[in-house]
Amino acid sequence: MLFYTTLFLIFIYFKLARVHKKEEQSSQKTYTLHAIVALSAIALYGYGIDNYSFLTIVIISFLFFIVAALMVTAVQVGVFVDGKPFIKMSNLYKAMPILSAVIAIFTLAIYFI
Image (cartoon, rainbow, N blue to C red):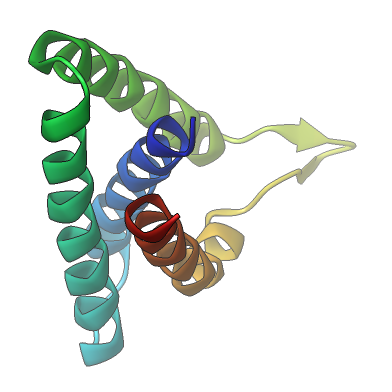
């Protein structure tokens, strides 16, 4: 179950990174975070290929890709409560370092637990 959760978080992270690149200026810190998550994604897919069927990984990855894109797009369009946005993109950008740390920790946990 941790494999699928981490895989979903990776897709959310990379969708946020793509939107962040289009809207904001990138720094060395963001490139470092992207590299950490990319290495975690490679390690996670390596684990997935060893332990699950390839077709399952492809189907789940496709579904997670679609759901992550829809979630980030919904936040971009805006969910408003009393005329104010419920979740702002800037809040998600601020959470990217935490998200990358969670992804890295989950990936390490998959290998060592």
